Length: 194
Ligand code: AMP
Figure 1 (cartoon, rainbow, N blue to C red):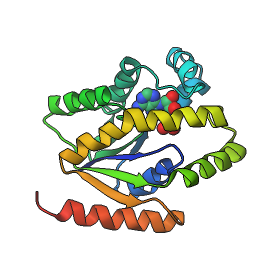
Figure 2: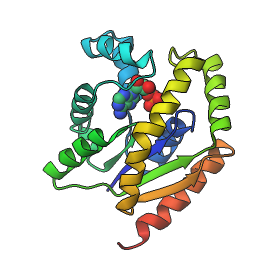
Figure 3: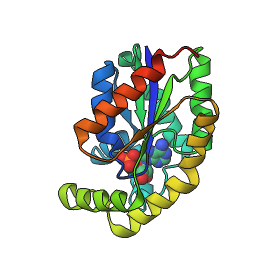
């Protein structure tokens, strides 16, 4: 049973690492960005609403995001735990997640923080923009998403660090090397009695 979060700036590779780590631990990777993109593709009411924010690099309002996450964490496949990717992104969402887990008498086991310097982040984001054509990977929107990460999401990392559950992982290098690094770091963290 492992309940985890992965946090990293846009472009840190957290989505990719989330997939590999989740497979390793036998839990679903739950990406709020992917959930939103699916809604946008299917043009659901939520998707139409969310895209107005996503296209500008802004955060989708908490009430929409929290409700979507609560529904997803109610799914049959989260019995063994989960790896949340891209949530919580601000302190209000952190409180919402705490409340949701507390309702079921649960708590988080670990928060993986993927570290990468800003130059490398921007380089990777621009590369992804040319490869995948995501509508929020333009230079101006990228700048806004990085800014929001600093302002809104770093306080989340600080709050989890105060709980002693943050595992820092160097996000530089090859995909497989980073995955191995994260698995090793998480393995020793989760084994250490607290
Ligand atoms: P991501 O794929 O994690 O980079 O997310 C892409 C976009 O989806 C973000 O720029 C936001 O507009 C939106 N989004 C994803 N997760 C959240 C969240 N936890 N809160 C608000 N907006 C989110």
